[in-house]
Length: 237
Image (cartoon, rainbow, N blue to C red; front, side, top):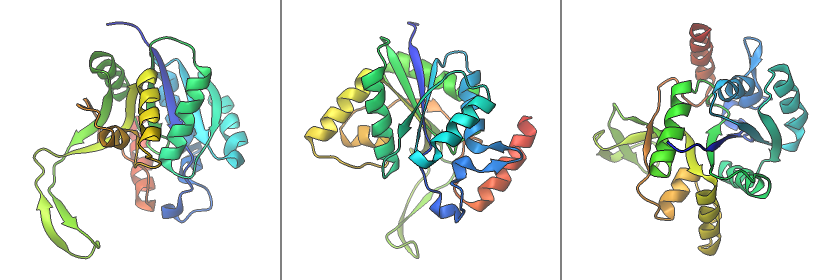
């Protein structure tokens, strides 16, 4: 398998409105360590990750730098200003990499900072699948059927679990492919998308190849997620 230069682009620009907390969830300290630092450590520890970039709002830049220093994250390279949405933040990060990274055969793993329990195996699978097939989307088979609802109060249909997968992050693409995706999005007037992988879908990029995820690689969104994270973090230690 050919070698690649692998970059983790960690999105930490969220405001945490759904958590109803003063501190955005990615910067919360839980059991003596911020969520972001735990996420950074996962990529720091992986031998195939060469660089780490963090996307965040300006008021948290000093905090990010201090956390990287505290955690001895020597793969940390730079902070990129966040956008007004997750997609805008990812786009800002990718554009920064396009301007600064000169390594050939660069692969970018775009990951949510609030998925701190990403495993070493998930990172490995993303890199391997991307190198083999040209992209990798972390995902899990669905064990439940889904209701179809317009208002969240009633349902008028369902989607069977067969054939459905739940997407997680990382979303992994060669940097050259990301350049083309942003160019196509600009040409077609696409200014917003739910994520990098949904943008790929909107642009007709197919197939998207699956890198098997993990139930523990969940996104901290609600208060109850903190309790789950704390319990799993304890087991991890």
